[in-house]
Length: 230
Image (cartoon, rainbow, N blue to C red; front, top):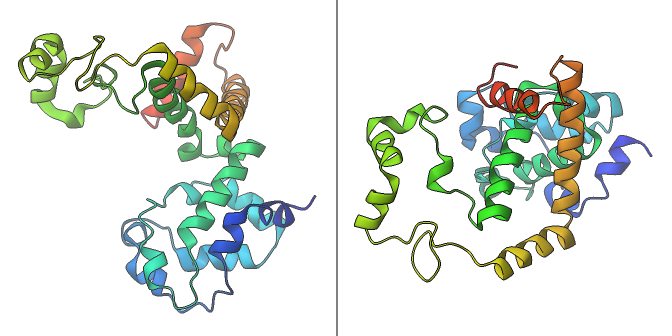
């Protein structure tokens, strides 16, 4: 199947594109366009071309990962187009086809998958305090570093129930709830998507010379893409 026909199968394609007339209203209001090379008007132009070579190049680039998903474009378009939604379509097929590994920002999907999905399925939260390591998040500053080093004492003081059973903020999520979360991932296709991201990321790591047979090799790949080194 041709690439432009493939992406049309996603219901969001129909919701996102209603004949763009290139007025540029989306670009004028887009924060990402102000601070990067991203331009939602150009994005819809490229998609409307239905040129498979252009679409493949787009899905292999950093371009589709620059959108911040604020959906400001939706509020201003006189035709009801939603470039931010089209970005979701392109990202989906970039992941399904393995194109995301061809760009620096795309490769960061592996780190996002390992952190967020690992937190959700392992702990029941998108973000857990003990995963926000100061060496990976220097922007948090010295106050957070102190909190991180004194985490149990700090969260006890503020009345949280960190990693403990029972009620309260940051409590330990019971096994039945975690199993329910896993079943939601399975039914919605999130588990399959995560497996594809892992598979294509391992292949890319091998191409770049990382030892994927050793767990430390993929750990190094994770850190390098997380820090933007590759």
